[in-house]
Length: 254
Ligand code: SF4
Image (tube, rainbow, N blue to C red; front, side, top):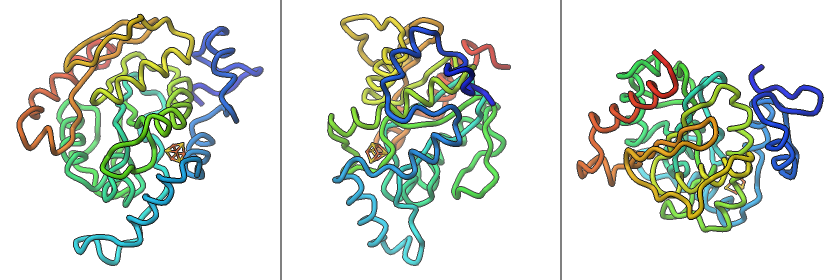
């Protein structure tokens, strides 16, 4: 098990980092246990109410579907060298299907690009049981519950951050973190700091294609794969494939 706890420490995390992470409640030693803990979380009353209300009143196109309506954990290869960090599940995407970026236009864009560069076994991901698997990459989010208007509050972002910290600690092969957008960028830097890495102050600003070396990691920014960006041409498939190809190269993945 990658990143399994051993003798009270976590593989891939330095002693100093472990001491800093140890303050996170219910520290657990593997991704499966962390996944269970994420899915059961009800720490943010506003988001719990929203994620459940959305599932109870689906739009016409999803009438009759049973929504997941719970937090959405990370998904991918436990031996990942690349981590993509989104913002939060979409109300009718991940919040409906139970898997990150699954069942909406953002996911259609993301999975097609991952497949095109050889990081996914298929170009689509529409349902959690569709056989999609990732090689060398893991996909998570800064916030695990769908927020109203896609806008989590600063307090909700802070409350959810420990899940990202722990996922990153448990991805023992991780080298390249690709935050999608400015909020994910801030979460990734905060998570690295919580892992004991020295993050520059003032914090480097987000930029598409911006690279920052932090300890043994590289943080590589990308515009988010939201419809707002992909439908307007701000982020095109070639642009995003170039980001993924750069991440692969830095992660030494072929
Ligand atoms: S956003 Fe994160 S911390 Fe808040 S309820 Fe959802 S999983 Fe829990």
